[in-house]
Amino acid sequence: MKKYLITSTGISLAFLLTYYFFNEPLFQSYLHQQFPALILFFYLQSLAVWWMLRLGEKSNWESPIYVLGGVTFRFLTGLFFLAILFIMKVENIRPLMIQFIVLYLVYLIFELFAALPNLRRN
Image (cartoon, rainbow, N blue to C red; front, top):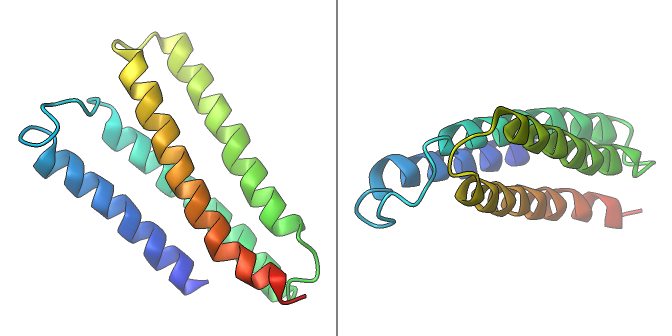
């Protein structure tokens, strides 16, 4: 599970570097000003999911409940975060929502690829 944590950190750093170094010249400032907050949110989610996957590893992957719990946790906290953004009425919400969905899918796909090999052993 160290590999999960290291890769998650790498993904987050890659997105932060993209924002800080390539947003102006490459993306013409398309990335929302709240993009670093989105990355921090998803990284904190990854820490919680890593903890759940580590619990699954300690139980020798006898039950898929830890992986399902991680996916469900990511989904529900993502919905809650989106609701907060709508309530706060952030300006330029459309690009922020698109970027949120892209980040959600990237982290979800990474999470599934990290967890599925462990579940297939049973």
